[in-house]
Amino acid sequence: MMNDSTNQKEKRWAYLIFFLIGILSFPISIFFGAILASANILIFEGLFQLLFPLVICSILFAMLLYAFKKQSIRFASQVFVISLVTSILIFMGGSFGLGLLIPIGLFLPLFPLVFLLILSVIGLFVFKDRPFVNFTVKAFTISFFTLFLIVGGWFMLGAYEHEYGTAISIKKFDAPQGEYAEVTAEELKGYPALEKALSGEGCTKFNENSWYCKVNPDEWRRTSDFVNKKQCDRLGGTVIPFNLCRKYLFSLDERLENDLNKGIVSEELRDVFKSKGISLSEDAFIRESVDYAGERFWNVEPQNYPVWKEEGRLNVYDSSSLMDGIARLFKINEKYYEIGFMTP
Image (cartoon, rainbow, N blue to C red; front, side, top):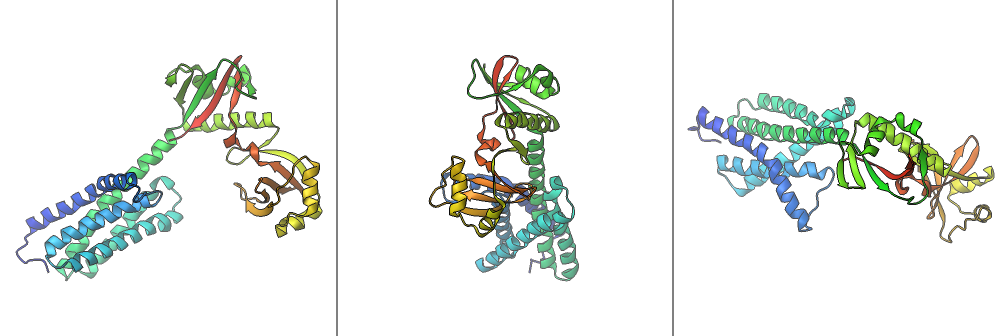
């Protein structure tokens, strides 16, 4: 139990130190995370980037609480494990529990704060007659509330930068660099963001023939849709969700649907592809999958020929016409450009 001589002033200083632990845990985790990554010991990605600060905060919290308790290493280890598990549960519960009920992605990182405060109030009430446990609950709340607030703010800043960090990149050429689509002067007038980007006015220059221009997210999306549709039209394809371009090749006989469902590349199926000038490999197989719009389809692998059932027809498409694999080359006002769309 904490020494009886500890007065209110000393407690306030202790709480201040726990507050500083919450502040320092985030930059310390970034520092050590970078060292571990550079040494190829541990590389934190995705969710682990957010959980690593909780590990650091738990270590510092256990060390400081050990200094107050002045007990064994076993005690410090128990404090570390309990604080780490509790903080991870709060984080996971806040992010994936309440977050599923309130669909506001930007504020999702702040939801753990709600869980932490609720648990803290319960803990303070339950342990009101046990001074050291009561002190521990307050200290834990101060440290991790501060850390969650910093992580939440960092998340929100990242979301803001991602939303408003959209840009159009331009490369200018004196001669065609391959097959290109054309944008007329009249069409260009309907897309002021693209018109501004092509001019290079107010843009960040890489060199005389390459630059990028930041644009409003709504204009960025609208311009991206337009550019991708123009490029897909040139390929004779159809734009599908996520700005992918699907180029129709031919249709299969409905009788072959049974083979597709069984995952069988039958001789009849091979013959149909061969008649269209496509030789399927010896190890070809069928994989059933779902597209970006949630539609079921089959894929003839490993050469990747997707087959969709549309209006009773089994339509085969050329997967090589995905937008990510296509240079967006354009002829605009008698000049040639490659147009790209950048996000942070």
